Length: 94
Picture 1 (cartoon, rainbow, N blue to C red):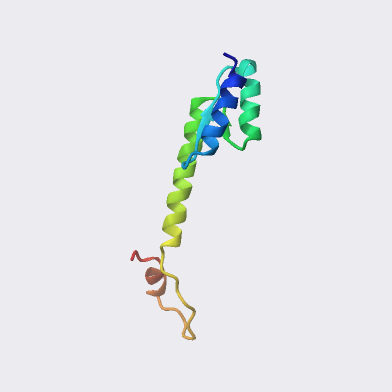
Picture 2 (cartoon, rainbow, N blue to C red):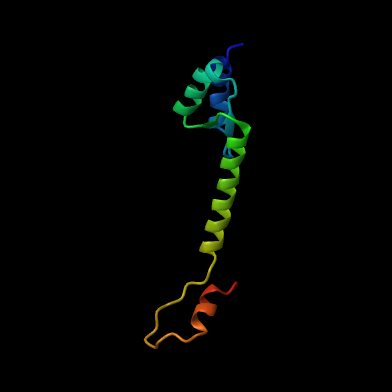
């Protein structure tokens, strides 16, 4: 079965997924059309498993950093000059 036919069958399933999906089409020229079809559908497609894993790790790191950043307490400006304890209070975990 041609890779493009497999990609065509997979696109609706992947598009309806509730979680992000990464794909890896290995085979150079033999999977070029399948990779193109996934790209047109907005589905991440990589040439090697290592590239896909690297992308996954980056997305996990980004999500963790974003979550950590958004969960920090916000410091409101005051009319008094900051003390040496102010930076520690800003970055202290909840």
